Length: 149
Ligand SMILES: *[C@@H]1O[C@H](CO)[C@@H](O)[C@H](O)[C@H]1NC(C)=O
Ligand SMILES: *[C@@H]1O[C@H](CO)[C@@H](O)[C@H](O)[C@H]1NC(C)=O
Ligand SMILES: *[C@@H]1O[C@H](CO)[C@@H](O)[C@H](O)[C@H]1NC(C)=O
Ligand SMILES: *[C@@H]1O[C@H](CO)[C@@H](O)[C@H](O)[C@H]1NC(C)=O
Ligand SMILES: *[C@@H]1O[C@H](CO)[C@@H](O)[C@H](O)[C@H]1NC(C)=O
Ligand SMILES: *[C@@H]1O[C@H](CO)[C@@H](O)[C@H](O)[C@H]1NC(C)=O
Image (cartoon, rainbow, N blue to C red; front, side, top):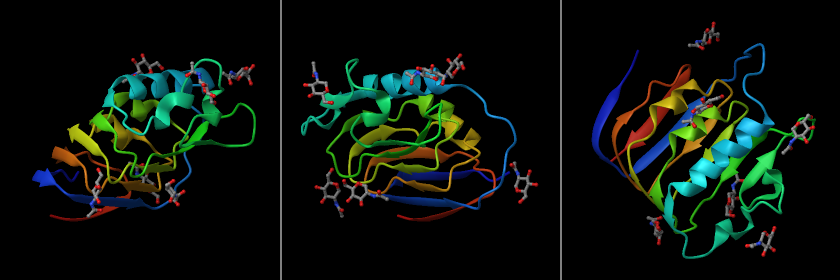
């Protein structure tokens, strides 16, 4: 168990070694709900990048979202780099069980890195640099975190 406490995090890159987890938890419906919750925690979107995050567009076609091709489609990447987003990172991200890449650098995400992110067993790469995050870095299984202030 490794928990690192930092006053304010300006740079955070976490790289995880791949390891197979059998069974798939949650569903594509959970993925959609998780993304909807993620959007709700964003209070400002000056570039309106999340305009496409609406009911008439499948969540796999939402800006910044990538899904695996195989059915049922599951979110594998969330990349909203440098979008000027202001808000918190919703703990619902921890329910995106197929997520491999979480790239949210150069935004104004505030508050804590949600501990449920540590449950993402397929995660390979988490990049959260240049936000206003603070607090503890969750315990990521089999991940090495590279950080500097
Ligand atoms: C929903 O998203 C599409 C892009 O996928 C966009 O063209 C449309 O304007 C959006 N609808 C609303 C109500 O924002
Ligand atoms: C979720 O997956 C099921 C089974 O593949 C499919 O019938 C359904 O349309 C999918 N829903 C969404 C929102 O992708
Ligand atoms: C993430 O999105 C940014 C901006 O759209 C793009 O420049 C970058 O290449 C993307 N990164 C990955 C790993 O897809
Ligand atoms: C994660 O998903 C479960 C159901 O699969 C739900 O009960 C829970 O509220 C979700 N957590 C978050 C933080 O959205
Ligand atoms: C940090 O992100 C802001 C946008 O929120 C951007 O304007 C600025 O250039 C970024 N700084 C660095 C060092 O990348
Ligand atoms: C870390 O990876 C090893 C194999 O590389 C695996 O046995 C172990 O269960 C993983 N730990 C967690 C907490 O997933």
